[in-house]
Amino acid sequence: MAIVLGSFLAIGSVSAPVGAAESDPKWRTGGDSRACSAPISFDTVGPSGPGVGRRVVVIGDSMTRNSRTILRKSLRKSGWNPTIRCFGGKRLDWGMSQIRDQRKWKGLPKTVVMALGVNDMRWMEKSTTKARIVKILDQLGPKRSVLWINLYGDNGDRFSKSKQSWFNKTLDKAAAGRPNVHVLPWASHAKAANIRTTDAIHYDYKGRVLRTKLTVSYLNQLFGKNPSAI
Image (cartoon, rainbow, N blue to C red; front, side, top):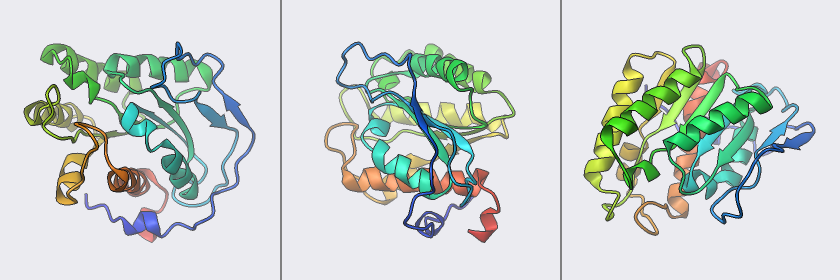
């Protein structure tokens, strides 16, 4: 499916009104500076834009952490009610625990964005990584709309292009038999845009903005209301 960035840019510059906010009381960081602040849940977001006030949870690592402010604002502008759970350095097994924690806290929304996998490249055991991808998709179930952002980075010491390629192909295969699961091909978009990194895996400002725009555009086009009218 062709996703047009114009659908992101066309949304108004004023965020939708939001209701009262509540932080997850069970969020724990252990004093780790790589952690995001506690996930926040809003009672309501104004029912405008493609999201029409619906809830979405984003589960990610430091790539999400580094862009969470613009991501939250951009999602609200498109009418989504976002909760962002992010922690630098975390892997797929942490993602499983976050799905459970979100379900216990406020319930798991019908729309989920997964943005994990980078750190699994550092200690990758293929059978374990593949099993965890499948486990996460099983946890989310067939009735939930899922967008998973694939991997892109430099050819780092423990984050090689071959590992990225393997992960992305494995993710594609896992999603292929699940019509509710869509993969955002961040790798191909980032390569085409010549996105640079500040180290092996973290993106410069241009990369953070583009990844955010694509995430919101894909959500709007795939799961938003009346996408043809955007």
